[in-house]
Length: 266
Image (cartoon, rainbow, N blue to C red; front, top):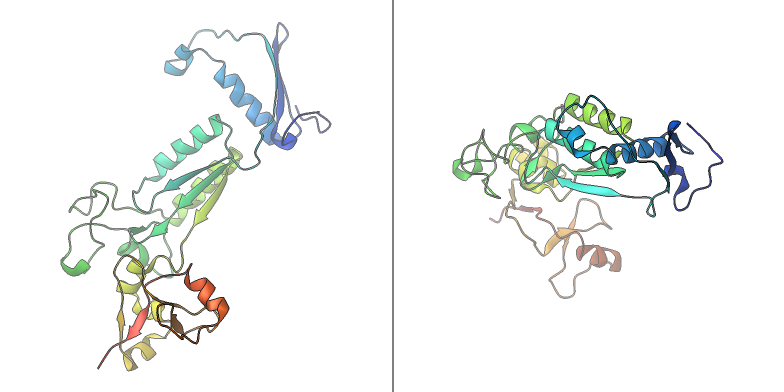
């Protein structure tokens, strides 16, 4: 039941009061999320046999519990970019997070080792960036890494979520009072973008890219050639002495070290 005036410690909006006695089970909370957390505590009290197989009857211990979280954010980071897990596994993880009363799922969806979310306007991102395996010069897919092996259709290296999959994940999590935080790294995801969509890395149109050829830096690591945040469309070198970069761009250079496109040397 909802009881907006229920006195609880900590973050009371997510807390609950649970009573189990001869009259039955009573759960009260200020919000639906608090009541949901109380239900999870009832599940914790079930005997192990009840988790293994249906039981003809269940016995719960008499108790009174008043509980509220000490921290507002209780999250789990899940990296599906480097090692992909499909929708079924993510939904299972959400069930477990709910059971332990966690309220956030941080999904790391993109990195150099994979782009895992369908973008209908940029199909190359998943057609190329969600596949790892052997391909000479990485022509058709990303290079193997993290033990993904040479086969493109096997292991944790390949795979992506369709838009329909992702919407289902969001709805599934919301029903369990869990916020999904999708992390899409830009510009820290250069490899799949730069190899299949080079003008997207340079900030130029395809026509401009053809008129002024550019070499794309696709190596993994850091570079002294970085974005000049104070002047969009330009770069500055943090390694060169006497650089005209402003204090702001120098400060950002320590943070935003990334591969960038450079004019082809002639």
